[in-house]
Amino acid sequence: MVARAVGACDAHAPGPANPGGLHGRISPVATDPRRRRRGHAGACLDALLTWFREETPVRVVYLNATANGAGLYESFGFAPPRRPAPRLRT
Image (cartoon, rainbow, N blue to C red; front, side, top):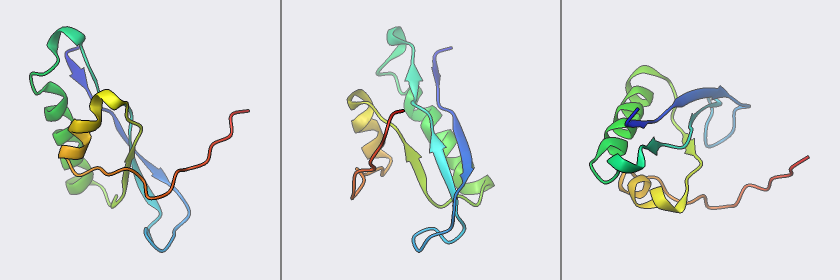
């Protein structure tokens, strides 16, 4: 594996910003450390976002990102959340 990006569609309760309730979720994009900075992660992310746009009804896509990938995600239009999402670990 050189690079990968995995996406899934998750059903949620509908809301004002997403009446259909379906969210896209991207697992962390990963690239073999020896192959970084060659465009592989960007190509994977582009293909995955094209799939969301063209083959699913998803209109909202979430991802959990590391600081290493922030520039890549921002270049594709991802923005930090307006409000942090509280979490509880049990």
